[in-house]
Length: 174
Image 1 (cartoon, rainbow, N blue to C red):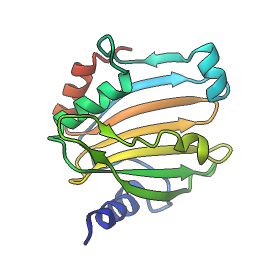
Image 2 (image 1 turned 45 degrees about the horizontal axis):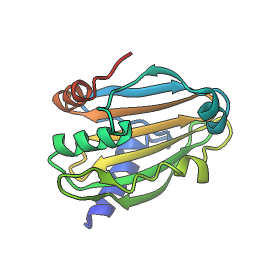
Image 3 (image 1 turned 60 degrees about the horizontal axis):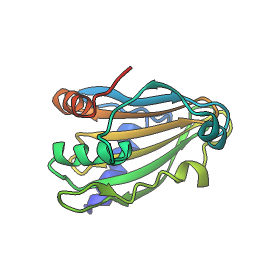
Image 4 (image 1 turned 90 degrees about the horizontal axis):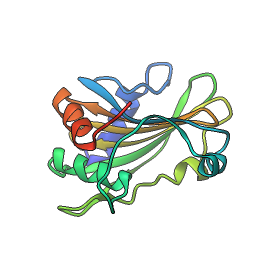
């Protein structure tokens, strides 16, 4: 089975429940890296600032998100990974929209993060959207979750050591 097909199968059989609800399960641990309450739309939140509940640090001159991806790459041995996008309807039923290969340059950040997907293909009213980066081994998951006009969260799912080490390196606060 081709790797992208393996990942899609894992998502369909493990991360989507029997009722087609999205639930990141089968991982040893979870840690929230970032969570903010939104103040209306993304644009409104950009102007007024997010109500950050959990945050993380980056050295001067580095962007926090780039720092997150850099450390994740190092901690996972720069394992091949795949982006995927799931949209959840108000009733909890979720649909997998797509799976794509993550580009990674050794010693650099994972690149091509499709964060704009939350704007170009937003969650249905009353639902949520989940952008995930799943390692080829299916042992770790970086998950971005957005519930329109409510909250945005980034979490890491995987072995306890991976979750703890990433939080320590990013100096997660909250």
